[in-house]
Image 1 (tube, rainbow over the protein chains, first blue to last red):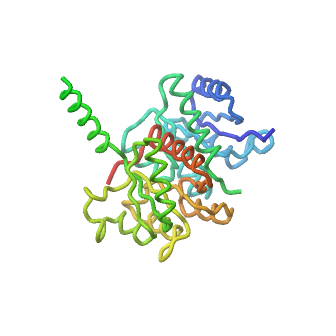
Image 2 (cartoon, each protein chain N blue to C red):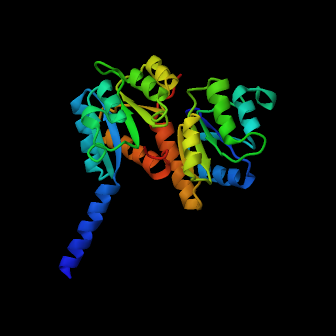
Image 3 (cartoon, rainbow over the protein chains, first blue to last red):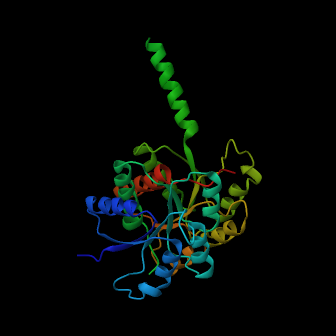
Length: 145
Length: 163
């Protein structure tokens, strides 16, 4: 069987992480998931430092799903850290948030977000979003080696 | 009564056309653009396609210059599907240009290329491409790809505020 594609979810709400994991399993998608709880953990994970040095246990993700409102470092700070400071220009970062405030949307794109999703507020919506994310990124999109 | 339904239908259809979001397709291969258009029509996707045939035209379109000055006839697109190998100004140059322009740099750009060369893929992401899709070889695959593109970008994604 093909190695599962790895997804990193940066979200401070544990219940949401649980719902997300359930939706991935329900969709029978061959993807593994790591969840980090704030922006600093997301940056540490991508840099492979602290608890994330073992790349077998914590593989570098194909896709980062990033909330905006998080403790320590918010999503905007994470975006500028990974695009500017760390030079990770190739990692797709999908913002996944409550806010559809145009100023947030604009700022996220300016800082290098690949795309901007509003979090679905039903289980059906979440399931559909997982299918769409999977079809687009893991079936059709080509990633750098 | 019948007239009433026809009227309602007409209004609905007109609203659908007005609401259609537009994609700028930049590709020097007219046949590929026609295939995309045909797949969009067949799948009844609510997308309006605007096409240009090289990188220089793509930049003129985005800047609203020359023949693209009228934004009613040539609306600013929600996103761009960009081929890489084009005459005059190629896709990489378009990416470089757009990402340096303050008013344009948030525009989502999806590469749509027949090349699956890792060097091209890497270079496109480095230059600021949001995503990289390879042109499929069959009509069925093209329809599936465009459906995934519509679902992803137009059902779930929020675009930056329009210009």
